[in-house]
Image 1 (cartoon, rainbow, N blue to C red):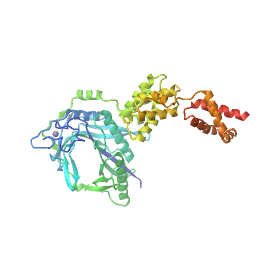
Image 2: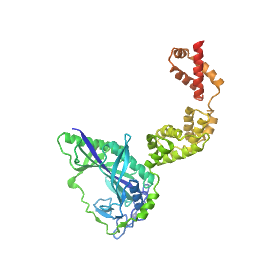
Image 3: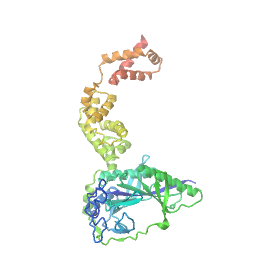
Image 4: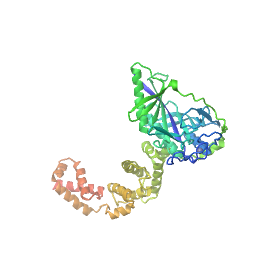
Length: 485
Ligand SMILES: [Zn+2]
């Protein structure tokens, strides 16, 4: 029997507000000493009262709009009650039955086909503190307590670990475009829980759902889901039943382990937060936020295809990172003004080829790479006007990054100008042919691809500076001359 996986994701995203959700404490706690960003409100001291952070509400609405959600005309806050040392009030202020935004979707690209993943809701809540275990003791840091957090709940529309990865990547790209979150999973600004079940292909009803937690990177999400799907299929194939439970991913062991069963599941006893009023969301406010949204990745990709003639694939690569997209647009604009103009296609090829390779190689993003759009366009200008060839251009780009010098200066200092002088190149071609009589003979016997190899020898003799078109023309000319003699 064939099985399929049903996956729904719950993603918590920390918002980049200046202050916390319900108090004035600085929300930028990452590098602060423990328990220094705290006050009576986020420590849950008796008598303290919360005040709603307007910016956090706006960020949530913006996220909802970007995810094609509806915005609730009225929303409210609810207490989610449970006891844990990182939760000083013994309850978390969250949203239960009236989330701020709901019923949206985002589109992922699955092997070239768009697939819609439903978004059930995006609600706003507060983060908890953090526990640290040191020398057998548990220490608690409340700096994170009360930091605004949105929870984005997908419909169970995801069918594979790969689709889950695509969904998460798209989600991260969107919150980064909006500027509402760093989306940095390693820093805990984006956290993922998954609901996973399997069922025989063709069956309508869902199988028993297992919640998987503790996945701290995109890679661990993929590995945990792969493991859990296989585990559940194994249980069913062996004639067993999947138990409804929460399981934690143990990265070091590469498996999920049971954390608590349904019997131990929390009853949070939600009830409306008595210290905060419900919020009425005015349509004019939502409209203003909608107008202020930046161009989002899907719109940007469509525009690149339309305006610059990019393939969907290349456009997708470039818009995946907002900084890369901004860099690209700056380079295209400079290229259009250059003399002769540099086409968007040329900029695209260099960005997705050489520049991406250098980013991967050096483990740097586009900002850290210190190659400005102007510097690349300058290099491409040198290629376009025949000063250097494409091959040398790659070395120049590398040198710009390493030395910080201007491309033209590098070309002059290192004597990289292209050799186009026919007389000079003809001499080198004749030398190379004299040194390789066997290859010349092979060419004359009909193995024409040998010309390419000979071309490589000429380029080597000129330290790659020869004009390739001129060399090829000369080579053919000289080889054919040897045929008749
Ligand atoms: Zn506080």
